[in-house]
Image (cartoon, rainbow, N blue to C red):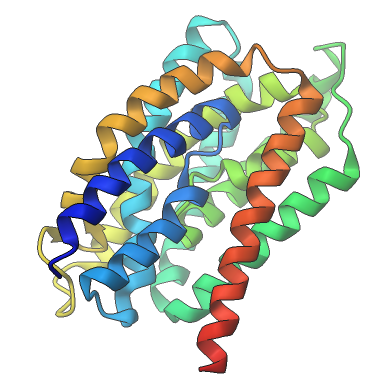
Amino acid sequence: MSEFAWPVLLFLGFIGCFAGFMAGLLGMGGGVIYNPLFLWAFALFGVSPEIGVHLAFGTSLAIILPTALSGLRVHYAAGSIHWDQVWRLALGSSLGALVGGRFAALTPGLWLRALFGLMLLGVAARVSWAHPVPREDPEVGKAQLTRLFPVGFAGGSFAAFFGVSGAIVVLPLLLLVMKQPMQTAVASSSALMVVSCTVGVFSYVFHGWNHPLLPPFSYGFVNLLIVGVCLPTTTIFAHLGAKMTHRFSHERLIRIYAGVLTVVGLWMVGNTLVRLIR
C-alpha cells in the first residue's frame, strides 16, 4: 500500500458515519456510498485495476452485513418487520445472490463500474417519476405475497453483482409493485440485507480466493483492514439512522433516496467515461 494508506483509511472511517446513517435511514446498506470511495482509495493504495472493482464491491458487502443487523434490530423493536413477507424475500435473495456473484466474477471491472452507475440513475428516475403511493390498508398486500420471491431474487442478484445490499432494488420494488409505505419497505429491505449480504460476501471470498493480485489483509475480494476501519462508525450511525426513519414523512424519504442515487450514479458514469476517453 502507498504512503497515503493510513490517512485514507482514517478518512474512510469518518465516511463510515455518513454511510452508516444513510444505511439506517433509507435501508440502502451504504454500498452506494462506499463503492465509489473504495474505488478512489484502492487507486491510492496501488491496487490493480483488474481486481479493484471486485475488491471494492466485496469489501462493501462485508461492512454492510453488520450494518444490516444493527438496523434490523431497531426495526424489529419498532414492530415494523412483517416476517410473512421477509422469508419469501429471503428465499429469492439467497438464490439470486449466488447467481449475481458468479456473473460479477466473470465481468470486467470497467463494465461493472459503468453498469453500477447506470443502475443507480435508473432506480432514482423510476422512484422519482412514479411517485409511489403507499396502501393504507395492510390487508391489501396479502394477495401479492407471491411476488415477493422474484422481488427477493432481483435484490439478491443485484446485491452480489454490484456489491450493494440489494435494498437498492428491493426498496423501489416494494414501493412501486407492492405499494408499501416507505417505513414498512425500509424495514423489510433491512431484514433482506442480512440474507443477501451474507451470501454475497461468501461468494466474493470464494471467487477471489488466492488471486495473485490481491493486496495485504485480503481474503478473496474482501479486504479486512478496510472492514476493520469502517465497521465501527458505520454500525453506530446505522442505528441512529434507523431511528430517524420514523421521524420523516414518506415523501421526504423518497426525495432523499432519489437524490443520493442520482449524485452517486452520475459520478460513477462520468468517471467511467473519463477512463474510456483516456
